[in-house]
Image (cartoon, rainbow over all chains, first blue to last red):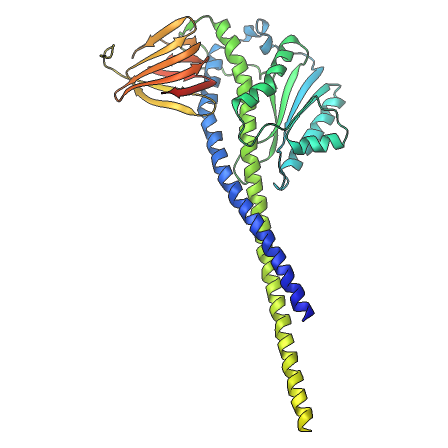
Length: 289
Length: 92
C-alpha cells in the first residue's frame, strides 16, 4: 500500500542520518578526549610561568619594558576571534560570533579603532558576508593547535604593541569549563593586568642570570604567547565538546523519530491487512450468495 | 661514570606548553645556560637563568636521559628544579 511504503522510506532516511550523527558523536568524543589531555598538559607550564613572572615583576619595570606599558587611553586595539573550521557543532560558532560582534560594537562606540583578526572558516565566512574588514583571516589552524600557531598569530601583534601601534590585544575564544559547558569568553592579553599579589614577589633571593631585565624581556613574550596558546587549545577542546553534545542530541532525536515512524508504519500495515481480510471475507460472502 | 655530588637527590620537572616531558627525582642535571653549561646538584641556591639551544643531561638512579631544548629558562628553588622551554623533546 502507498502509505506504508512512504513511511518505510522515511524510516530508512532517518536511519541513515542517525548513522552519520552517531558516528560523528563517537569521533568528536575521541577527539575531545585527546583535546582535554592537551588542555591539562598545558597547565603545569602556565602555572610555572605565572609563578616566575610574579616573582620578577615590580611596578617600576613598566617603564623599561615596552611590553608592560599601561596605555592611558586605548586608541587602537587588536581583536582576535577564534572560531572553528567545521560546523555541525550546535551554537558553538554562533555564540563566539555574537560575542565578537558585541565587542566590536562596544569598542567602536568607545572610539577605539579595532583591527580584527579572525581564525577559522566559520568566522571568516560570516564576517566577509557582512562586509566586515578583517586584518587577517586564517584557516590553517587545525583542531590540534600548536605553540607555532600561537606564535605566528600573536608575535606580530606583540611587536605592534611594543612599538605603540596598538594599545591592547584581546582574544575571543571558547572557554573549556567541561564538555557540556563551553561559554564564549573575552580575554585581554595586553596590557597585562597591573599589580599581582605582593607575596611570592622576590621571596627567594634568586641568583638571576643574566639579569632580571634580560630574563623578563625573554619571559614576558612567552607569557603572552602562552595565553594565546591556551585559548587555542581550550577552543579546540570546546569545539569537540560542543559537537559531541550536538550530535548526541541529533542521534537522540533520530531515535525518537524512528520510534514514532515505526509505530505509524505498523498501524498502516495492520489496517492494510485488516482491510484485505475484510475484502476476502466480503468476496466469499458474495460468492455464497 | 660516577655521579658527582653528595648522592642526595632533588626534584626536576621539564615542561613545554604541549606536555610535561620529565618529572621526578634526579641526582644531577646539566642545563645549557645562555653563557655555557650549568650543572645543578641538590641544595643549589635559588636561581633563575635563561637557556640557549642545546642538550640537557639528567642523571637519575635509572641512568642518563637527554633532552634537547631550544631556549627557555631554568628555575631552582627549595631543591626543586623546573625547566621551561617552548620547544623541548627527548633526545635519543
